[in-house]
Amino acid sequence: MGDVLQGSDRPLIVTSGLPLTPDRPATEDDVSPSGSSGTPRVSEQTAISMVARGVRASVVRMPQVHDQDKHGLATYMIAIAREKGVSDYIGTGLNRWSAVHRLDVAPVYRLALEKGSAGAR
Image (tube, rainbow, N blue to C red; front, side, top):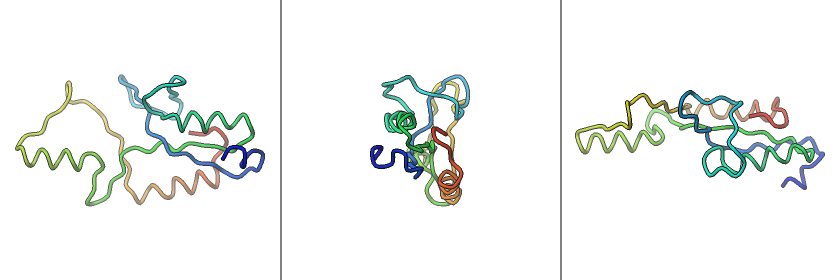
């Protein structure tokens, strides 16, 4: 895809996960080490590497997507807690899970298409 888009100014948007930052919330500036098996995924690293070749590639880092009925991974955790009668947590329970409502996802991609710059996350 990079070869076809090179120099065309047509956008390439790649979806990736959020970076793992154990001591604080992640930001757009956080970058995983090259070759990292964690998030952001290799697809993000590949897209960003295409920028140097003249591809207008950008990345949308998508957290858990939810709506009124489906709550991402939390849907399964809620079901298990209801079945078992108990809800567990890891560590001190201060974990943060980013989430976005499905109706807010499409405008993010539209803005990335219309206003996104090469290399943006």
